[in-house]
Length: 319
Image (tube, rainbow, N blue to C red; front, side):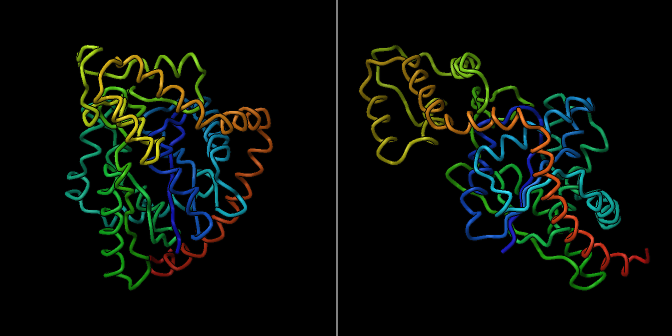
């Protein structure tokens, strides 16, 4: 079974990226055909700074590898190294009704948050469909906010298949309900666009500052606290097993501790969980040529599959 995901190199990865997608990919490497790419074309919808994009792409590669992506077990590449995806994007655009894109809530949400209302942002779901369909992807691990994009890819695939026969595999979204949406420091979905992240590879000082900024209510230190609606608890439980969550819940209900205590505890959890990954990440960043070799290795494998798929499409479209 082929599984695919892509993550934008939009700066330092945050725990929402990890628990929402990367962890699922790492855990599934042993039992599925894993395809994972750095979505640098997609990242252009929010920034056109070339040097920044280049550096962020290398940082993303180092981050994914340090978090457990194995290039020997998974196909791991830089999106722009497989140009066929842009060609398929244009072809799929001919099968995409405007109304389908106009109903995409992600576009509306991002524009409302201040991103420029560009054609690139508007047609983002079509490029995502090309990413998915080019590799005959069966499963796409996503957060709840991305389910609609996988459904759009499926709708486009159905239109093409109805016209040309069974060209594309119909993809399905897979959502880990436990971490379908990881909340940010303000209680909204964690996202770089919303500036509410807790970054995995930041300095200890920055990490502490980000965690300290988590929004809480004004319950007094000595009073019991509502763990279910607390942003600190919602983030902390990602790092805890059932027993650990229960222990933390008891601390909330007992009272006598303020939110500052719980923020310090969360800081300890995050630091301990990602300690080894941070060390490996820093080592990889010192070897950019090695990172490029790993990405080239993955791109060669991805390109072979993409070219075979495009050849079938050329025959249908007359190219």
